[in-house]
Length: 478
Image (cartoon, rainbow, N blue to C red; front, side, top):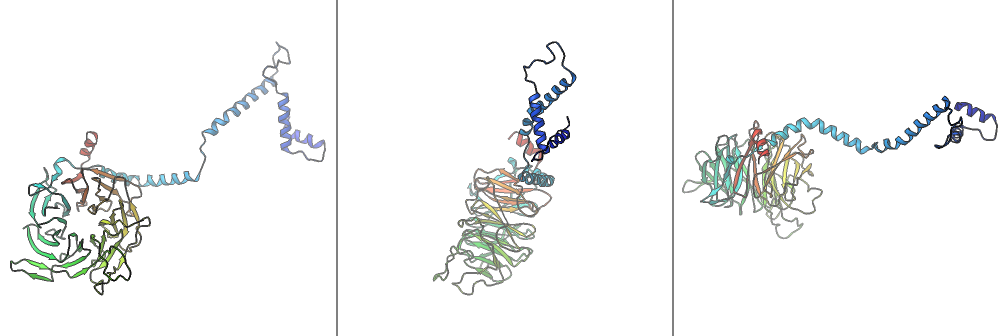
């Protein structure tokens, strides 16, 4: 009987309540349950009489309904609920897939970095082992290495065979902490623990002048971009000094030239900010200094007092009186999660001169804007990266896609950067080549080749270069 006929008959009986379609459906189900046979019930037509066709069709329909009802829970168990988290995960997956070809190409280049035994050099000074303290490239081939014995070694990384210095001379009677090539590569300036800087003619190994004025170890030097006459130095005495080889020069009796600074920024990074202090606040060590490219008169500095980066104009006298603290033209704010000041180890500027990378002693590298200093734009960290001293260096590749940083664990971490200068993808390469702290890293300025130099407290200088076949064989049979 059709469902509409059942509803019509029920309504024709009359009554206070109008029967609905759902009531009729319930009545039909109850009637079907009464007329349904039990499993062991005998056939009403007799034991040997076959059932009629209508009864067989009803039995087949009941069997199909029971099978569908029993199978339905199994289908719902494997059904995954739709949530907004799945939508965001799918969106992130599509974004990663869109960037995958670009990231895979960069990852393949980093994976091909190898350092064979022939490209390693053990530093030795006066017959004994000496720790290398800094290395810098001057041009596409020459690499300068300075050590704690006061020597400067120059290598040609394009030559095959074993890595050996082409030139080596004693530049200072004390440890040399930094070296910086001049723009044309003919000259280089060194910073030493004897409280002086010296300018050298590299080809002739001749000292062109001594720059004296600091009261403690000179930690870092930086040439002004596009200028072969001006550079800045940073020292443990807390001062930053600006030098010009064209002025403030005196001649000694032996013909040596001595220079005085043209500007002094004392207590550039005070150890503690004490307002209305009767005594001048002592300056903390200035660990890094870097000239900016968009304005050659500006330089950035970092110290052991905090993670903040300060910006200075070397044309200005920053302190009006001796007891006054110097005031920078700009300064970056501390990281939001910084509970206490830990200090900064090194600074690196990207090729576009828009971002500044600061390696801090909280085992993180902070990305700062070089154009509009404020809070850090991003934070780079990795389980393999640890910065527990002020000797851990950073370096930016000439293409601006890779940031290398040494580590107190002996590893060298190379992050892949996106177009915003951050590491949102988390892709990185870890170079295991030193048994002790890897302090200094330097990229070859030739953008057509990927070459990295690293040196550590194990007294070894290593040169890493691209070789996909050698890297694949080394990974299979280390």
